[in-house]
Amino acid sequence: PIPPDTDELSGFLQRVGDLGSKRWALPDLPAWWQMWVWFFLMIATALLLTAVGAAAVRRDPSSWRARVLLAVGLFSIGLLPQGIQRTDNTHFAWASAVSIGLLPVALLELQRRWLPRIRPLVASTGTVLVLIVLLVGVLPRYTVTTYAEWVKQTFGRSRVAFQVERGGRNFYYGRRDVADALAALLPAADELVPEKGGRLFVGTHDLRYTPYSDAFLYHLFPEMDPATQYIEMDPGVANREGSGLAEDVASADVLILSRVWYNWTEPNESREVGSAEPNQVVRDEFCLVDNFGERRDQPNAPAGGQLSPDAPFGAPLYELYQRRDAWDARTGGDPCRTQALPES
Image (cartoon, rainbow, N blue to C red):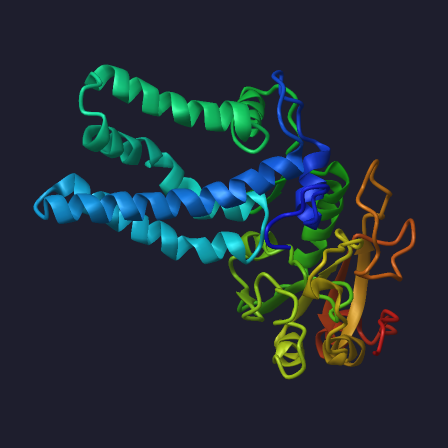
């Protein structure tokens, strides 16, 4: 929702990420109120930088600092759609990192214009303190708290990231059960890679819903080309009728389908059922090689079930598929297993 809710975190990944967040030692706003403040701060700082920069350029067109302020302000306005289109802390950070970082410069420019008698050291200290108060007192959960936690993990304390490795390439995952499932899946997938690399498709177990993709798997298989342009699997785009997703699935040599985020639920297009044609392609043209991992209820996990409602307790986290012709050639004609995927 725009602006963010003031009584709950509505984004699925936002809620999941908040489960493991550490409490800040100082009094702070609830997480949803911090998101609400950040949303308007993101817009306000972009507009402030632009206004201050434009005024400074009018006063002195040759000023390098004035032109930089104006350019950064316009650039920050250009980033606003990134933060508005999905109201979570990750997108807010992308959209406001530049503008909030240069907020002290804009405040100094205002001070020199309207309060010139303040000593430079006092003015500089004051503008930096404004930024510190924002980060420590207003938005600590998604700035200093998170940064401090990752610094601790860098030095081996309270680590929650588990290494997934293949051929010297690494990815660090925040759930041990998923990392363990991938440790079993990757060697099995190695046996299916064609000599010339072939094409790999990574997606959801039920391709009628496409709110996410474990796209890091493409990084772990550099010799294989992604079989689809929908790397992120955005809902309402990848799963719409006529998107070409079914053709992408049909072009793949290997499929890795995931139930990891089976209970994704958000107030947006991720709830809407898309085309069932990709599921039909999986049934008709691919054989199930094996399942990996088991779904376990996560403590305090967000409620829901829009994605893969057929994923009961103990259902596999990942499914590995191979093309029927390659399956027949590799196994000598063993029966081809398929999954009972929804048809509509």
